[in-house]
Image 1 (tube, one colour):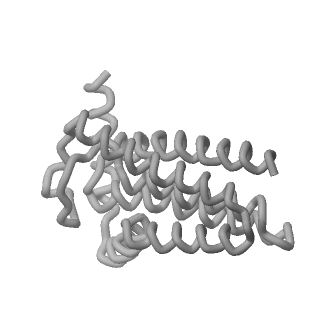
Image 2 (cartoon, rainbow, N blue to C red):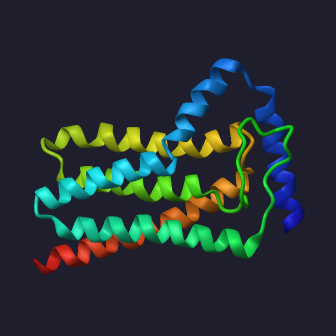
Amino acid sequence: MISIITGFDSYVQSIVDVGRSPIIISLFNFITQCGDARWIAVVAIGMAVVAWRHRRFEYKAGLAVALLGSLAASSLIKILVHRVRPDSPFALMDVSGYSFPSMHAAVSLATYGFLAYMIYKLMHPPHHRLPWVYALSGLILLIGFSRIYLGVHYTSDVLGGFVVGGIFLWLGIQITSRLGTRH
């Protein structure tokens, strides 16, 4: 099984390496920053302020579960798995730490996914909701791909991060829904 995963990772990386260009590298350097701790913190604080201002405390609880759960689980899995990052000739950024799962992918899916959920449930007028949901979904996918393109993660790291983020996004939505029905 491991050889299938590493073979898939190598195959995808070889395709990505052929398509590198300075302009696209600059674009993906910017996109990957949207998954950095600073951006995620600003987005999460903004979401919490909106939820607090509109007295939707169930959304603050759901966001906390999604964001903090994905962050904690990703950190723990990295420690347990100890997967080394891709070889330095492929890396276009200097990063440290273990590779699996991609914390950018996990936390971005959990945070931006929860923002998409909040928009879908709360934004008025309703016809403005779907463009935002699609845009945030695209951003999540681009952040994940940026990690592969920049050579700091394998494809399986990003997919693993998406699974972790998806689990905690689902849990955050469940918490929000259950707390919301009590009021």
